[in-house]
Image 1 (cartoon, rainbow, N blue to C red):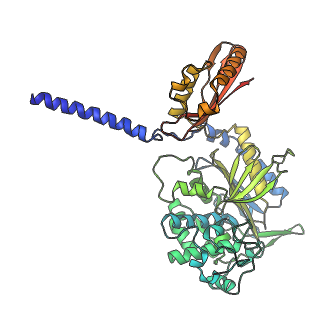
Image 2 (image 1 turned 90 degrees about the vertical axis):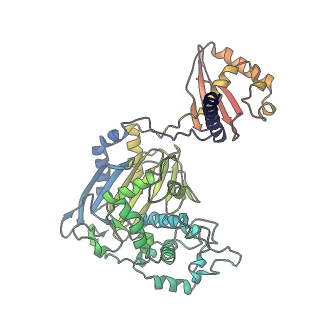
Image 3 (image 1 turned 45 degrees about the vertical axis):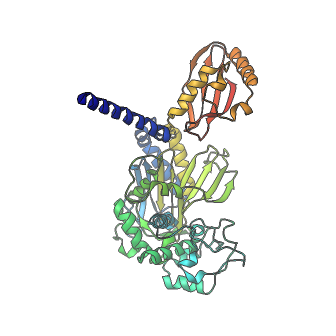
Length: 517
């Protein structure tokens, strides 16, 4: 009896364990989540094979726009796979540029400053909706109108403080000290808008973020960023040009009367937080990789630098900037595009629904741009040493060309288990919807929104039109709970779309049927 009891207890325990696992799966409908993935495993090789095309595009553009030198890179899935350079980083000494030549990247610096702020938020050292005056009391009660809310850190990040656009004045303040910035605040700021209502680009705003970093950490913004980002990423970067080896430093030039005039380099100061970073294509590609690796959302372990969700948050359009109905890739074919601003980043969405994330930079002597397409896992960076070098359009054109020539596709969303289950259950009910109300696969709203006799009539007519079903194609998901599939008939095809509820288990709440060619 004792032996039997022991075996019985073990068996009962095993059943309980299995029931526990089932219960857990039922309680957590997202347990089986699989992230989007790239189907083509030869993507990087295909892009690398386009190196001569990429080089030619950048070379021709640089010559047409009088770049003394330039360096570019293409980053795929976190790796710099194509890079190149041309021209002289130092004309007087005939120093040729290379992938390690260090350029001042100007406002490309803004996203690094923004990332530092977001990291401090993650650590609980500040809140994005904190009034800026909590950290810089000299800004208390400053705004365009008396009824304006206090300016917040988030408004600094998204250029919505009401401060005026300050290019090129702001570019010349690079070396200003903390004290000089505070003195500017003490004399009262001239605002162009009410904060929180519109986008207007402000270098003062990002200099202010640099000051907040120092107030919170006790470290200059540059030192905090160096310690928490650049050293961990293995980047060679500087803020003060005099600390860069002379052979690596790109000098800046202005093209005037068909000649290059050297621009005086500005020392590092509090405005460096908006545009003072000096680095190379080789090093900056590691920072681009950090942004690329934030996508897609997944259950893998986090990196030690910053949470992936925080980087993705930076990529979201927090403030609308502009619309360009005439945008094109240089081929004269209009592709309307919308530009918005995240945290220190521009988010550019064009007519093909491709989303580009990055930032341009421009200072006396320099021009730069970087862009990634998160859903395509590819990005480019271009650094040049001529005043306000126009770098954005060529980067967009290169990315468009590479995507087309290499046949790159965005990540594919896997079909979730529940979505596939509902598809198979729905197929069995078509076209007659026999016992549909008792099947348990439809949400409570379904038969109030879709009358059974109408569903049957529509499906019957459609099935008669396409003839005998030969094949039911794989489901094409839009996300975890929405998708469509094609039923191939002898005389035509039928597309069925459906979407599920947020319940557990998820049920069919919406359904559409249509004939397709």
